[in-house]
Image 1 (cartoon, rainbow, N blue to C red):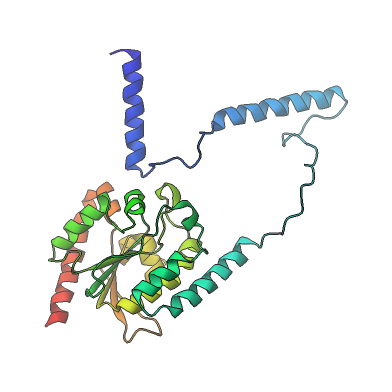
Image 2 (cartoon, rainbow, N blue to C red):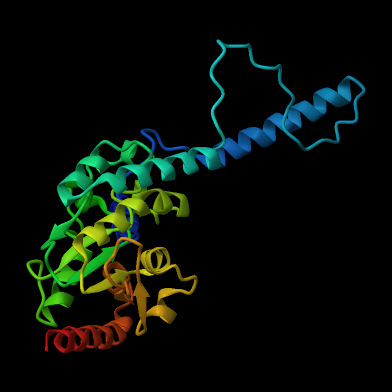
Length: 290
């Protein structure tokens, strides 16, 4: 095998590893070589030390090379601290979500909401899929690349596994309703931040109130912690039942946590526990129907 073929195979293997890890797009147009930047910074510090020594200075500092203050540009309005901005966004989300009396109105409120920075980098709003009159509402973490393209939750590889999971207990998208803790894709498929989930939470809470499902199922750790208000990881929350309620719900909703399908694709050994959890959900559905 030639060196060129070997290099090509290595590049393909690296790209495949990136895809499996969820890295499917670049944030910047041009890649940044941090090694070169570091080498240049080190060289600049060396030159600065030598120059300082020549001028009679100590030349002992390893800090950044002093530079002249930047020229003053036009005065701009100072931006509020991030915490203040997030609080204002949550307050606005509470007000807008609270006014929605239907799912259509809630979707319209989200489409006009600009308080979540994820909206600026996402291609589309990813709201819900399935039957809003179903007895089971599933809440995942965040849209991925395929979800962002189609504007629907769980339509990529993890969505196909979720469909098989639902089918194993007699459910499908006509007998389940699906959403996420945030409604726009985080760049690079990263986990949504606590602030992003907090900003979107009023809309999710209102969605749950409008749908009023018989059972609530969270998928993955971030969704479980956010919706169930629990600090433990999903491995300790799964297999247990909780009570979810808000002032506008007519009654508390039984809620439980499952591993996220994307995690199960990476860790198939956990499918056995998930199968037990699905059977427990099926039993609750059958008992409630009697």
